[in-house]
Image (tube, rainbow, N blue to C red):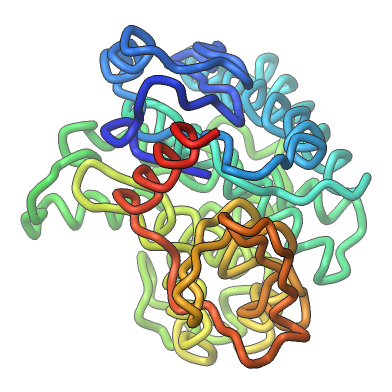
Length: 360
């Protein structure tokens, strides 16, 4: 489960690797945190890490590691490409990374957890782009796209925020309200990215990928930017990228706000059908995302605390929960008298983890 670095305590173990500024691994899965390690994470400006939960989910976690490492390699490839002035020769590494992500998802892997939530503030744009790419491809597969279309979707999605490299980090990471001029600069990043690619990479990219970069902030009701187009003018691939972009951004801690709990982000997006997004795509999103992801600690209507250990795809708000104290497994899809009241806060999750560690 994800915890902000400020909530870490010695003795907790990492459930996923932590990556640094160049996509390099800082700490591997399974490392037991010490005071020194925690201070080191703070020095590297790591926002949050994913730690082992209370219950044994090692088999599931091991299945996710390859996917995390592939995305970390993709993050390093796109950062290197940008730093080397976006040359066509170096772009092959980015394209290969997207192909690996597509193959991974076609093989049955499901994106879970994010690089953006565990990466430094300096490389948030790159890490976030990889998360958006992976989730867009996963939604695209569920939409029915074949591999060629998934590759175009993945390329456009991994490049969707390229224009932010033209925006100062001071603006991107500003903790206070942006001025009108600063907001205008942010709103121009799709155009910045589109023009950069049109000038240097047009013969390497499909029109679809370019449209994703330009249109990923457009909205179904016409209230998006930069052009204010609406409805079917936007296209389903840019809209899928937009959904992935919104969800990833909402569920990630930033310097200027805390992340939304996954269930709150899920509910907010579910209310956006035929407003921000086409209803069909919102329904697609609902089949691809769990409001209570595996590992989440939740408070039940019985007053007990449990850990989500499986999900019910057709009943997303009624997962399978294992009780912390009794270890009893309760399938809320069948036990209809019990409901999830809410996910535990970071403070509550930390306290539960420490209590469990002391009681083992």
